[in-house]
Image 1 (tube, each protein chain N blue to C red):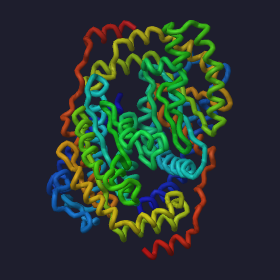
Image 2 (image 1 turned 90 degrees about the horizontal axis):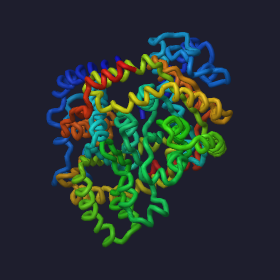
Image 3 (image 1 turned 60 degrees about the horizontal axis):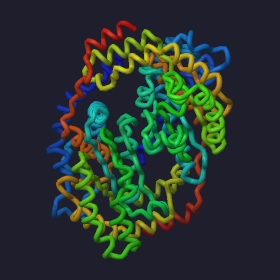
Image 4 (image 1 turned 180 degrees about the horizontal axis):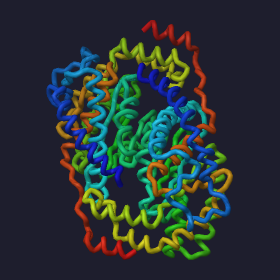
Amino acid sequence: MSGRHSRRDEATDARDRLGRIAREWDRPAGEALRWRPGIDVRSLDCAATPGWDGGRDEAEEASAGQAVELADLQERLFAEGRTGGSRSVLLVLQGLDTAGKGGVVRHVVGLVDPQGVMHRSFGRPTPEEAAHGYLWRVRGALPRPGYIGVFDRSHYEQVLVVRVTGLEPESTWRAHYDEINAFEAEVAATGTRIVKCALFVSSDEQRSRLAQRLERPDKHWKYDPADIDTRKLLPEYLEAYQEMLERTSTDVAPWYVVPADRKWFTRLAVGELLLDALRSFDLGWPAATFDVEAELRRLAAT
Amino acid sequence: MSGRHSRRDEATDARDRLGRIAREWDRPAGEALRWRPGIDVRSLDCAATPGWDGGRDEAEEASAGQAVELADLQERLFAEGRTGGSRSVLLVLQGLDTAGKGGVVRHVVGLVDPQGVMHRSFGRPTPEEAAHGYLWRVRGALPRPGYIGVFDRSHYEQVLVVRVTGLEPESTWRAHYDEINAFEAEVAATGTRIVKCALFVSSDEQRSRLAQRLERPDKHWKYDPADIDTRKLLPEYLEAYQEMLERTSTDVAPWYVVPADRKWFTRLAVGELLLDALRSFDLGWPAATFDVEAELRRLAAT
């Protein structure tokens, strides 16, 4: 298995490189990006790169290092899950249209072994889903032990699009904040580390990204005329995001505010937050549950 | 979206490179690897590289080209599925322990955007699954339109492990060949291109790979003492594989026989077979269902 051996060497190299790169973070990403009272997303600088002193080139080098470390830690988590462990990670991605959730999945989650990822994209609920209440389909998509779960949109739509478009009366959607906090506390208590990232793209950058979808025939399928109606509700959405952050950023399931006008930063930042979650587990390798020498002898006899 | 622009340029570069690399295939992979009457897997050269004239270095260059083409074609397939198309791809991976199914998922399927992949690993059935019959859980895991489905093991276990270990009487498992052919014909008729790969590792190479799992603490979790019991049944398994190929390689769902002693070849070959399936769709981009100029004007007004 020379491939795997060299992956370990690469992991060591990557950690060395990360040591050099680490100085580009003037403080940990989790600290720089974590939502805290006083942050108003309606006046956020979406082109900022909080915590990151480097530029795009350094970010790309750091991303390459993240890839190797992610692969290593994900495999350890998976191994733990296969041998009785209960821990998992859940990455929740929220953001306005064109904020780059899909790019994060492609470029960050795409670095991880598909065997260890449970990805779920939440669109408009099907009639069956709608009949069960908004947390039903979310519960069904929670990561199993050892897995990294990824939600592209989530139960938070219930306090975002549902609120802004008036699909539920205020008394109903307003009750969801407490419901969601209780739900996430329960999920965290079962061993799932929840990392919630809200991606914020500026109005100008969003216009530019929507224009590109219109100008390029290979992007037409991503465009929906309703996107412009949504865009006109930007102030209402930002108000809903603001209250969501204020009401549902908890110690067991904190929100991170990720400026998203620079795609390379969005991906670097989410990659780092995901890595931080994995690092916090201090993952080893499961001990053998069999007698290694005896098994080697059995094998040699075959 | 400069990232996407450069991906298109990369795709062009990759196609040029593939043109140069293509000569390393002395005939198409699908032709070189497709099972045909007369192939006896009990005397297969598992270190062979059928159809491939190059070595490992050329294979790695070719794999890099595959990555870019896979990303491009997968996105087109996904776009088609989002706009009313019904086509999808299903990659079925079967193989003896250590044949490298997991490596194929990590290194080939891992090249594809996670948003477009539905991966399912089939282990021992749960009681609920067992109660429903062996095709039930398989049906539930079929790729939706626009997706690439990947089965790590599959309904074929019903004529492999079930047969070899006597879990069902012969009259029962023997009926599965026709059931499976009927099932796959139905799946193919709905627009799913089925690509079935049987990976064959030699007995010596399997011993060496199992030994490495025992010698390396970071691999102990992958080792199961039962693997040696399975290994002792190698002749019985090869007989079961042989009959599986003879009975279930059909025009709509052909089997490919992939020698698996050289991991780089296994990955190159499965990547090429997957690409061939996508290429056969001749995928374009969906046409806009809206008035592009009118939408650009609406956008500019926001």
